[in-house]
Amino acid sequence: MTTMQPAPEKFGDIITPFYYYDLNTLRATLDTLKKESESSGYKVHYAVKSNYNPRILQTISTYGFGADCVSGNEIAAAIKAGFKPSETVFAGVGKTDREIEAALAADISCFNCESIPEIEVIDSLAARLNKTARIALRINPHVEAHTHKYITTAVEESKFGINTWELDSVVSKLGELENVKLTGIHFHIGSQITMMSVFKNLCTKLNDIQKWFSSKGIFIETVNVGGGLGIDYDDPSKPPPFEEYFALFRKHTELLPGQTLHMEPGRSVTGQCGSLISRTVFIKNGKTTRFAIIDAGMTDLIRPALYQARHKIENLSSSGGKTCQYDVVGPVCESSDTFAQSVELPETQRGDFIAIRSAGAYGEAMASRYNLRNIPASYFSDDF
Ligand SMILES: *Cc1c(COP(=O)(O)O)cnc(C)c1O
Image 1 (cartoon, rainbow, N blue to C red):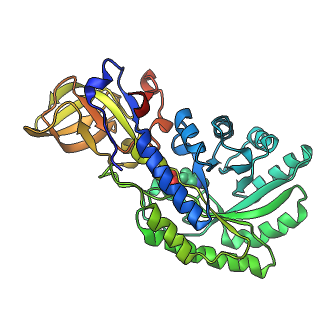
Image 2: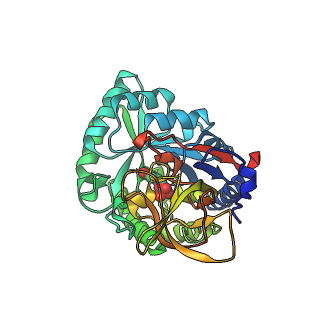
Image 3: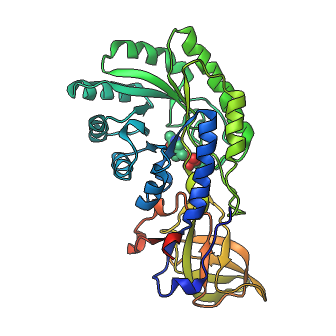
């Protein structure tokens, strides 16, 4: 897989910044994911929040994957793009009544629940609609994800998930409720996880938790291991390690007869297919720092400002020849509006096209209108 960046001539007078998606990269990624999931017998729900661009969603839905949604609007967008309600799950710590009602009306496959009060509300809303809601318990397995703290979700005193010591009271509560049916257990321990041992630790915890449910005589149909698989931001042409990832779960999970394992990849599906394309507005020389001021900012791609994330940066207009070090910054009135410091680029001029790579996940999806800037447009390789 090589993510192609079109020659800048092709961009003509398209207004920058914009997102450019290489659909061949996306399809190659989806082909591998489909092959691995089918041969493992696992069900994939794509995490819509990583990229909900309609065309991206449509492309992914044609592969027959389900959708993992975290808001009512995501559920609506997923169904509109072709995902089946019966293969759509709804996660999140703060589902509102309106969102729950809409999800019940759409007959989604499962609510991934994070607290007793949430389960009680789902039960009462389902009763009112004369439905039974299928639920999974999102359990906090206390696995350290070794990733940025903002995307670590499974430590103690995290707002996410039900702690294992609460399971007794959750299960006895479930016994009192008539309009919810426990069908699964769910885990999601964080994002951009690159240490495979983290997933192995998750399997160990998961196997223990399975034994606990068995000992209570409770059968769990689906075991959902969430998402979190990381990508190589230093090498945008590198596909995510799906083979290794699936093999790890095949080796280390002890599934019971009749159980299905579910996965919810987001970043690993969409990350490498997208680039944020911008033009250089000015080169500004400080005392020791040379700033390349580009027309993309933290409003278009917030990951560097929010998580100190690094993305590979390329000058598409010039290659070879003399190189210089630049701080690549955006126009937004915040010092954190910096994409990279001291990055080596070919000598860059006003007007040069700059590509920020591996921006397909949590890029466009997190765009904002701060400074009353425009939301970036999106373009697709198939259209060039
Ligand atoms: C964000 C999220 C995912 C996807 O995470 P990635 O790191 O993008 O793979 C999956 N499941 C849940 C519950 C999430 O919140």
